[in-house]
View (tube, rainbow, N blue to C red):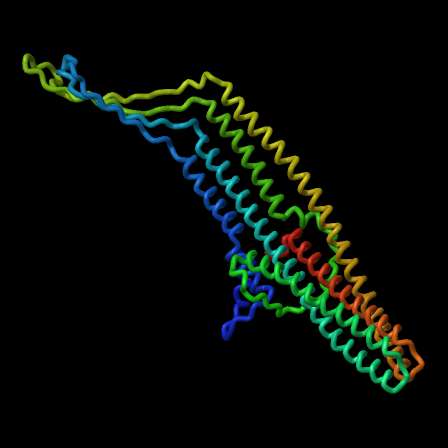
Length: 408
């Protein structure tokens, strides 16, 4: 919960401002899947007291319908109290196995929290990018309107054709429809985002943050970083738990020892007065279980061994998958960085060219078709840049998930 504590100061005192960090806090506190994972961990923590406690003692009572005569008197009732004790170290081994499995559950919870943070960041980036594209296209409508006025002015002055005005109208209609479709696309993303935070679907999703290009780290010790991933730590705890369960199976195959006492109530004899007349009888008792049916103990040991082997192979598979994903994530970061650098250069050149085309058309020396084409090129580069920025942000969020950065 260290990550959550670090984010708590971000809640505004004078007013509530929902930043990405605020949304992450809300998700960690409210997400039902995460709550379910934590409840499973809490349940696993309650397993240890169950398996590490002694079995309940047994108390047997008997009232003899037909009195048994003894030398010291008639036996009227008998009580037998017995406590069984597992073999030395059995309870400790059971407790150790349960605690290790509970630790594995906690690591599963941490991994789910990491995944949730990644999903919230990714969806936030999607909403941000879509909102930015809508804003760019709305600004482009204003630009197209200025082009229309320019084309209409050239037509009225006899220096241009009316078809140029019609072409602008066609582009405006297409741009308006694209904006409406993007707004429709934004709605389900906002609903999904709110449901991820387990709040009302109609709640406003405010995008206050501006996504910036994250740096591409050079990880030379990524294998060491991946070893700290909750999935691998959780599987390691499972392995240790199955080793402990194998010890439990061996211990349970040894005898259990019972200690107890037998107490008999004796009534006094009236026909004689022997020594100890009417004295109740107390007899210590010891019992030993005989685990002669060995198949179940052998099967329990073999089960633990095979589960250990299974988890060991699963660990290697997860490690390979994490390493592969990490390499691809670093590639995505480098790729996005280079694309954004390219788009910035192309935008600068395209905007200069566009000014020249507009100037040429205004002076009746240029083609209006080139003005519209260059404007579309600029619009495409702007949207591609936002897409690359979004992909870079998502890649960085995935990197944080892979190297467990959220808890530093």
